[in-house]
Structures are given as C-alpha cells and as structure tokens.
Image (cartoon, rainbow, N blue to C red):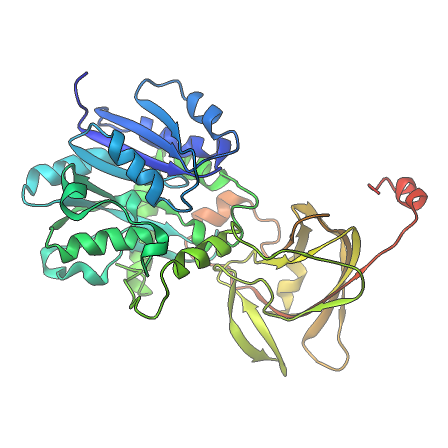
Length: 436
C-alpha cells in the first residue's frame, strides 16, 4: 500500500457522535492524500460507532486499552501507526478549513529546512463572549518562537521529528501542558517552524468552556462547518482577525513560565475546568451554604472582587456561566445572592439545572442595594455533582451569538449559595407529575 502524504492523528476521549463534524472537516480536504487515525483514550461511549459510521477507507479507529489521561498517549499510539511523510494533529472538537492540508503541504515544499509547518488558528471562546485569540501567523522576524503557543490542530511535522526529539511525554512528567511541552522541546532542539500565512484552523477551545465534558455538544461545530461553505466566511474570518489585532489577542496566547507549577498540575487544572475531574458530592442532609468561589473555573468567572459592598465573583467573558454544586440528593430549595451589570441583564436571565430549565423568582435584597435573591426548587443528581447555568443571552439563537464577533455586555456577580433539602410526600410529587 502506498504511503499517504499526511497521517492525521485525531486523539479523542468520550466525544461520541459529537466527533462527526471534526471528522467531516478532514474528509472535506482539498488534498485527499491522507490517512486519518482516530485514537481513543480508552473511550467507553459510542465514539467507535460514530467513527465507523463515516464509512471512508482512509479512516482507522483504535482504542487504547488503558486510559492515558491526556492526548500524549493517543498521539504516541498514532505516531506508531502513522505511514505518512508528514504528521498532522487535530483536536476532537476542532475544525479544519478545506485547504488546511493543502496549505501545510505547500509550506513544507516552500520551506525545505522547516521541520514544522504551522497554520493560522482562531481560538473560539464561548459564544457571545467576544473572546477570539489568533495564532500561527508569524514570519521569520518573529523568532525566537518560544514565546508563542500553537495548538496541535494547527501544526504538522516531518515524519522523523519524533525520532529526533522523542515522543509526547506523559502529563505527570511535565510542568507545562503536554502539547506545549512537545513544541517547546522541538524549538529548544533547534527545529525550524514555518507558517502557512493563512487561517485554516478553527479551534473550539474545550478548556475555555467550563464543564464542557459533562454535557458534550457539537452545535457550534455544526454551525461553523456550514458557515465554511458560505461565500461570506472569508469576510467573517478577516473580521475576527482584525478585532483580535485591535484588542491584543493576535499571536496569543503566549507561553508562560512553568517553573512554578508541579508536574501534571496544569493538566489536572484543565481537566477540572472541563468537568473530567470534580469533587465527590456531599449528601444534602440539611441546610448547606456554599462560598461564592465554590466550583468556579474556565472562562465563566473572573477573579473575586468587591461589588455593591459585598465580595463576589463576576461572570464573564462567557454570557452563560455555570456553577458546579458538589452536592447530591433529591429535591432541594436554592437561595442564591447575585447582582448584575447592567441591572437590566437580569431581565434576560434564564436558569437551568443539569440541562433542564428551572423557574425562579428574583427579589431585591433590602439591606444591600443592587443585590437580589434568586430562589428556585430543583432536583439534584442523586450520586453526582449538579450544574447550574445562568444564561444571560435572553434566548438569542446560537447562529447570532457565533456570527457576532463582539461580546454581550452582560454579567452577574455571584454571592453565596444556600441549599436545603425539600421533603415532599411521594403522593404529592406524583400528583404534580414529578419523579419521586
């Protein structure tokens, strides 16, 4: 069998059917000379069925027998199976434009001394957050490149790179993120990076979406894949790049000083932000008060600060912040202190718990002007943490939230949350049509 030009390694963990748009973006490449190796990190869901449903002979599925806990394990397994002259990587929730592999191939042809080809990438923050980072567009004048970070979805390297610098390292062996460590090691070895000079990668950053692994979704990927086929998508991309330059998000994020972190610390933090690691829930046996910083991460909340005379934590840049409740039980009454900027943002507020809409009441707190008390009744998960989502978009459709490059100017400040169990007789619950 003739070796392909590119071996594409797509590492995944329990993405299920939501991996389909990512695979579709590979199968739509202008350059068809590739193999796609989808490597599961000991997946336990229906990812295998979703991959095999693509029915393309260039796609191969392999599931690791033991979980590695990061993309390093699947990437190394992919390298061991790769046959291509060049190795390209793709995150399981990212998308490629149709000319991505063409651009990488042209870059390697034009830069014979380059070990890595890097394509321009847009990091998409949560919809309507206004957060778009642009990276991968650099010239030789930007060297040294150690201060820049390129997501794996935007890079490809020559086949011999792993033999020259070693494989991807386990997250417990490195202080940085495993993808950043791999590229920093290549730069330290003197390997040259060259840019394609164009945006061909659209990264739906999972780490920017708090608790995203608890409720997998591919609506953003489906929408962007459709937008790519529209004539105006180039204008949309150019608009994102212009705004990123204007607000200092161009050629960012940048590499940090990792010496202060313990090996594996950043990976664990990233896993917690995605909801892959979370505290064991405490049973709700009586009244319980949670501090305003409880279970907060991702791009959903800013640093603790004082507002309206009370310490709280502002939401943002995501207009749909989530709160993790490390509490388990049955029905509960919740009391949450919050404020908003502007005050009219509360008019748009919608609430859901564990994905189900919840009715609530808002009353001003008399002693603290600007603060309100939100009260609601909801059913907690019996054996896991529950998630509250504060939706400030007012029900705007996803398409509008994604197409608008700027963010919604709405945020809330969260104070303490109080829960207490609600003990209703089973017959009353049945009469209300609610589960016991």
